[in-house]
Amino acid sequence: MSNRMYYMLVVSNVFMCCEMLQTESMYGERYDLYPKTSCLTINHIETTARCFLRCINAMDGYQMFSYCKDYKVCMCCADLSGSDVTGFNWQTYIPRRCGNGYVAYNYTDHQICLKFVNNIASYIEASAQCQIEGGNLFKMDTKLKHDILTEYLAAAANGVSIDVWIQSEKVGTEWQFHDGSPMPMDTDDVCPRSLNDVPYENRIRVRGSTSFRCMDQKEVMQYYFLCEYYRQSVIS
Image (cartoon, rainbow, N blue to C red):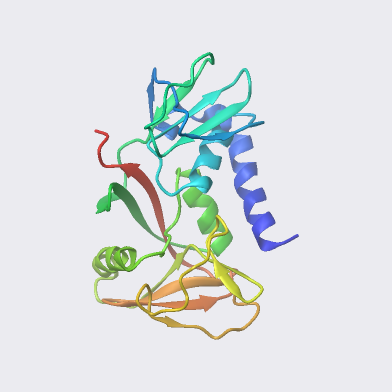
């Protein structure tokens, strides 16, 4: 079984075992709204939790998601410019405000909710924990994201060098994020890096106290980790 398959199995099992205990606040604020024709449609989704997880994995920032239990249809909405999709009994959720322990940062037209977890965990455990809380490990895909991480983690580090897992996966010789998109590895502008190119060092953590470099490591190693989820800043 590949690392990616195992990772998805861990997260899926968590959602399957815990769904009966979840509340609407897990997914966001419930509204009587229709999804739009501009939303991403995903069929054959068995539960609201699965819809929620698929939308998180499908896009970084979504304004809302809708689920129809009768037809097992999930719609992930980052663009609300389309017309209403009627004729279904939709359950629609808008991303919640940053939860307990999370800090909000403005990022383009979104707000990012970040939480530094100062309990050590393996990469798989850290990823699963972020997913349980409705997000993912921090995705370092722009220089602005690195600047945000630096500001936040420098305060958390308090002058002491720390190692923190961020979202990453090495497939063959290429680095990518959980959604399969490539990590920007052709420049140090996004994250200054020190990589060993050892095959079994297939994940990335950042290390530092006031500035942070990206470094590869085995996923079984235990480090702190940084969770994030996105919400639209225009929604109050």
